[in-house]
Length: 154
Image (cartoon, rainbow, N blue to C red; front, side, top):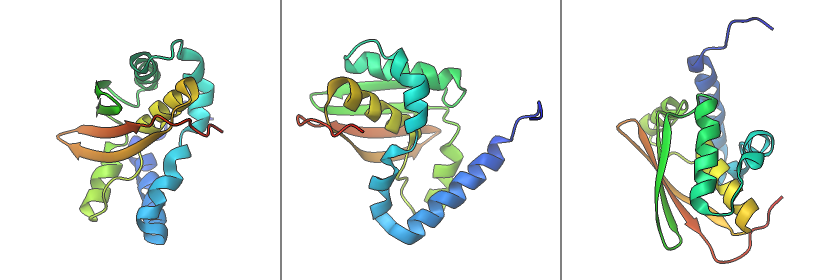
């Protein structure tokens, strides 16, 4: 392998093409098929870093992994009962979501959200749904709903 990296633009172009093709095939239904994207990253890089079953610790551990991987700049959140509002700044994949919006397609997948969801489902055995993704001013605002019922963790 060369010591030269692959450009982020190239990778995001491929991700965009894959997401757009999936959207064209499945429409809104594709959102629920994308929840497993990032599973290998969770298992290999995040899972062992989560040392507490508290939501703040889970989000912090996932955020640290993503920062170390240079995927995001930062992550923060607010929790009200079973609702989590997560802000992701400086995400490497934001250009993909911005292009989707140009095509009139609301963002329907987010790797940072998926990793947080996997952590909560794994450590708390609670089902979590990514209810909304909004991208504004370089920040992705994620709305996660944590349910009181057990998750079906793979």
